Image (cartoon, rainbow, N blue to C red):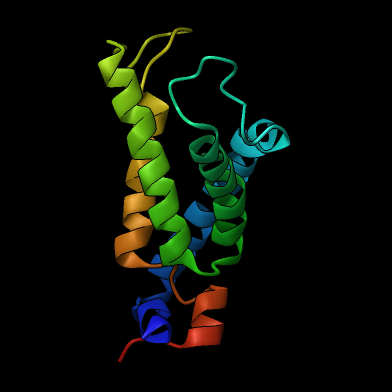
Length: 141
């Protein structure tokens, strides 16, 4: 059943090339975004954080591991689900704090919302034919 879930939807080569570019660039961004967090996975939010340490660790792992998975196009739906949840929580946290969508040089949820949309796209569309998922699990018929 998992293998069927990981099969890649057949897409034209140009669409797959666009997904490859999206995966690689955003994957690199997520690795950089999560690198400092993975250095202190259970406490990167600092003392007194409202989020338990194990959830901080899951977020750090989702960002670094998910970024690497996106670059390779490996286990893309699972990585996308983890990143979508992480970015959804980030958006919600900013909204609850009263942060605007965009603020020059101040707290906002613009970047988290964009990352959430990319994760949702890769979760629903898949990584494209130029991915490890396509090579390992094949394409949906």
